[in-house]
Image (cartoon, rainbow, N blue to C red; front, side, top):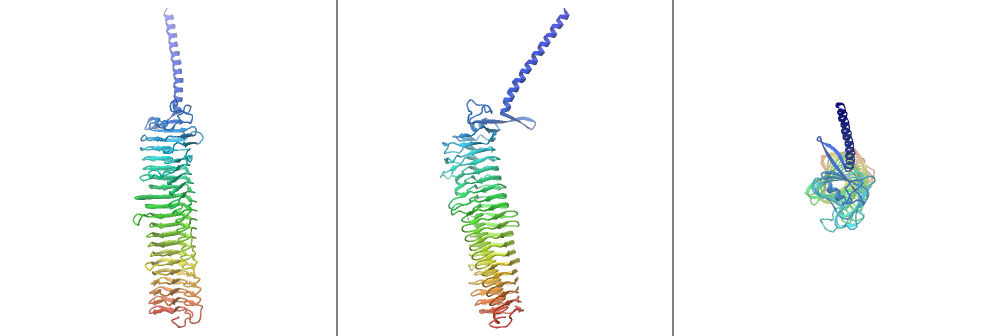
Length: 636
């Protein structure tokens, strides 16, 4: 009996264990299936030792917002439905192109959402009926990232950009394209931005393309105040602003680190074909450390082909290239201030290159209107063209150009080749090289006109050419202009009707430096004074210059005046009169310095050292070694 009871208990135990195993296996299968279904829609992350999940939801043109559950096999129909399901963070994956006929409001606060494609790159398309709103609106401290997805405006005429972002963050990552938007709104509050509009938001572009979009301001993207724009890598091309900011319009702090901005347009009276920075109410900053801004062109009366600044902007360009842009003024860059106290301050340095830009009027490389431009070591401005003034740089109306280093080379203009300062502007040259620039008219290297002032304390101005006056420097059309040369300055090997410097009005102070080896095809190999310029020389050297006519070193034409209290005029050559100094009814007063070893190749009385037919006074100046040396009509 006991044995049978034992066997019965043992059998019952086996049955219980077997049943438990079967139940457990069934449970595992059920849980596995459930987990697989869950896993299709969730991905786990570990944070601070606790398991949290990030939701993945799928969207398809064949999905349903009523019967779908957002899985890959049963997707939703809209981005809106997927977004509403995400609690904190999540990814919305497109399984096909989708057409949007109602704005997708991503406005529940503090969500972090990625929209991407599963497999191929799919499109979010503006529907033909969506004409008064954007495709996507982001607000309330949210963060939206787009990856491997196309947002396509389908060239549908609308009154709002494709994507609108307020007080949030927008990331445009690899594989993202924003294209074919037309914002034709005439309302001030909605006409900004063709592809994208942001306000009080941070925008980071890293690998995206923005192309073929149109609006009044900011054809590609418009970044309003109190935010930021960072471009790490991008292609911004073929966008159009019917007014300003063809590719990019920003009123916030902006960084351009890499990528290409090309073939964008600003229309009549617009500013900034490629990129436009503007703020007149609060200061903003701009940094360019890489990338290319190129081939942005306007056939209209627009300013700033590659890059334009207006207002309270402090900018540093230390890398990259601005090239082959073309429009009316400021082929490469345009700086403009609302007034003298509300103006941009831009610095070029290190590896920035401004090259091969064209202005159909002023400032082939850079045009400055009520702004400050600083050029430091390493910056290059070369091969630019202006059909009027300033092949390299034109500074106008109370502008300031400070050059402490860098190179301005091989620029060409009808009037002034390298730099033009006019309209009460100030040019300060404290270093650098201005070379091989060409002016069809005057001022191959530098032109100073219209009550502008220039001070040169260091640097080299060499091998520049002018078809008419001042191969190196053309100075003065107004009596208020002042040119001062004082320091380690070399003005050499320049060529023009007058070789080194021509002054036609104002006052020229020469205190220290060297003017040498310049060639005049007319008068004044070193310095030519006419119309009414006053030249005061207290130091420095004028030597080995050549004139095809008169005044190998200095030419003085009435009513101009030359006063020499120090310095040396030596080894210069003239073909007709005045190897060292020639005065044609001008005023010459010599009270110090040296006039020596100069040559005149004319008649025996042509004046190897000095020839004067005007007012002449000499006391204290040493005149020696000149040829011919005979005296006649104040010729030495």
